Image (tube, rainbow, N blue to C red; front, side):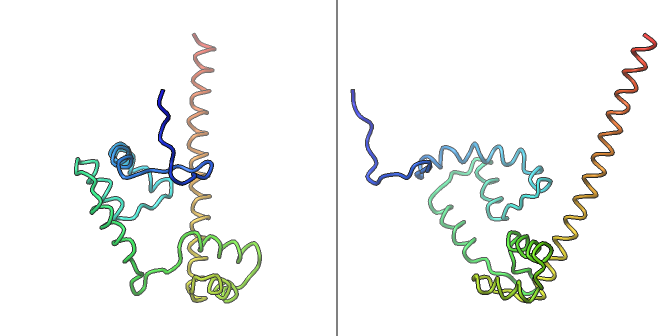
Length: 170
């Protein structure tokens, strides 16, 4: 009985390692599922970069995955810089700023200074704009949740009433 080859470097517990051959085998399957369910991602609030979307769609259409393709994707994502007028905060930083403003009571200037100290230079105006966007998003999601609850409640009420009618008359 032969022993499986031992890795040259010890792997930390719970880590998953993939080499290029494993990635070539897995990515076409993942790409097929991505293309089939990509319409669902915006509903769930997930933003996929256009470069990754193009790569996954090309792999799903049968284009082979090569090291050059991976290198092109890496270069295109490294070259992304905000254009004039584009927001410079990530969604996660915006959520953090919103939390600090609404829950901790910090002002937008204090938040901008804190984020700048942490390595993400932003202006207080950008922080204020993102806080307003997150606020509006949270209010909209509450309204959408209420509409969904009312809609599903109406469906359940119609179903229960029809069951009662069927029970009493048939």
